[in-house]
Length: 502
Image 1 (spheres, rainbow, N blue to C red):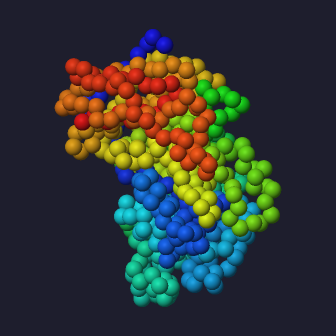
Image 2 (image 1 turned 180 degrees about the vertical axis):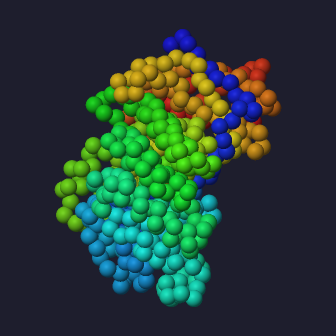
Image 3 (image 1 turned 90 degrees about the vertical axis):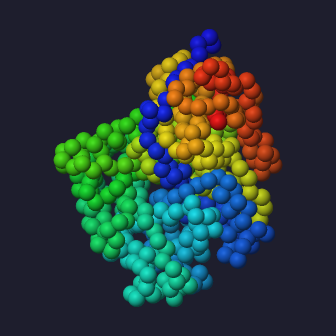
């Protein structure tokens, strides 16, 4: 490769400020995400609440903020009353979404306790069941969770041992209601009316709640865009966000297309923004609807149907336990770049999921916890991706893909912190060639390359496993330097790069 990738950075040209909620995650009652994931009372590291402290340490290191709960598809059959009160008295239920049995030993109070132990950055993001239930159950849950005292439901919470309200501000109005797989699936008209009535009732309790309406489950849905338009026609003045969900995997050995997955993600975001703004214009509203990308990840979904259909109602089976490669981590990093590049409108995002289930953290029951390859890009972005996203417009080499057309070999963004330091996040999509990078810096007093961290490997299929939990980790890049106001660096083939300028 002879051509160099180039772009310029200037603090006068920004995309928007990163909302901390962009680094959210997701805990669903699915597989081992909860049981033997975050909650395992018999584990040697378990605290008095049954939470695995080795997992808590990794969750803190990961840097997640808003944590969505309890689903996902699970929520469309969820009875919140089953998940409160003495654990030994809670009923066992069939979970239709994942053909498993739910013990309810971990419930609403345990979720809030988990968040509090993660730390002050961890915020609840609660989903209500609009599949098999409706307005009444949603406002009853809200009252139980958030009302201080003096009503039957708030006093029930206090009697259950939770004197302080849970303070849940951010609520999802159902999950993937456009999907025929969803228990209680609805048309856009049916869901839009139900979401609007639920939103009105929840705002009667608290006018300042933040509400997420269900968008399409993916850009490939037959009803995509029409669904958003019809739902927002009903809910525009009542909700704050509309949701997006997207998962990516390598198909039939087409790694070039897989590495360009973020091309699809960015078009998805831009198409939803266009739809939101079209509805707003039609309603003559000055309000802007923001986006909650509350499910995203690399997920080898093609394996899932066979896994789930073979189940006969077990409790917390091993499900969706994808083991991620270096290639997966590079694509994952590129998806993070896509989210940051749209930080003006994507102000909530949730990596699905947090532990064991398509997750950056893996555990063995009774044994170790370790970091998957995808852990590292997320932790670095959550730590250094705070501040103003600078406008990055890449000029450089491209390549052709079967799925996503022409794509830039360089996928990049940059974030300027309050103290003036700048962090570049950059992916080289070439599988075989290093990529020279030149970044012209305007109007910024930057004097040194503080760090160049690289996630790449001679074996692009290398993974971290129980047997080799530290096989893959970021390493230091070489040669990055500042010359006369220009950053010069070389990006290794198939790599995720974090370059910090001080």
